[in-house]
Image (cartoon, rainbow, N blue to C red; front, side, top):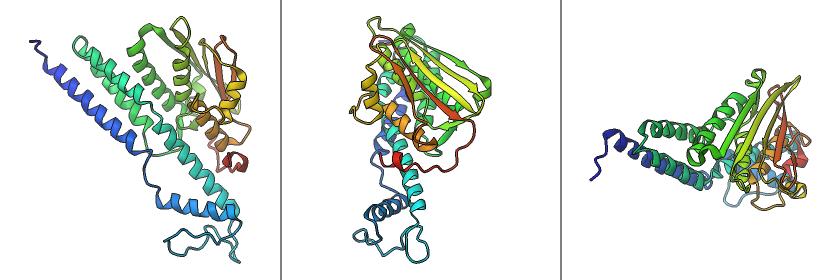
Length: 300
């Protein structure tokens, strides 16, 4: 019988514990009950949409309309801001819930494969996996720095390379001046994941991804480019418009949150063609955005 060393046993236990914890977190977040603030915002939205303050939730105590001004009229500007904030939070919860169970399963399988032969590397991968999931499932903050997002990207790439080896190549060209720029949380990693996933569909079974971030005066220009199969430009327009079902859902999510944060004209730009790869880019203002209300985006 094969005699496993203590290190191997400990690593196998860690992998099992991590699997249970991550699956528990992923399963609980999508169905979490709305907070009191979310419930109140939903009732406020119903009043705003109905044009008055007569809508009252069944079984709830009478409430003064949120943000009411003198005379009993609701403050629609505050209502719109509350709606925007709740939409952003809902999109973030959705994105966290979309951490693929297949990615989790495959990553843990890859780690387990290294345990008998390369326990040191397996231990390092366990740490990368734990750090990546902790960042992706964190509960606080709508924004992070580009440096923090790049750290999550690098850990994601390490886990994918553990599975695919040299079939996945990701290069980073990052200007140091933009590392401290604040960006919407999980705005870059989903773009890299999209490039890797769809890039591997090429006949060669390989993909090369270039992540670039450059300083452009008042903005940071960030792009993710791959040499994969590409797509029809019309189809990608449908993706961003929310008319393509579950295809490239991560891109749609990021695009919507960018528009909510910076305005309707500040979403993703996609340059692609069938057989010609894909480049997804964004421009991020180099300042902390104040509360921005874009009613057209919020209504989408």
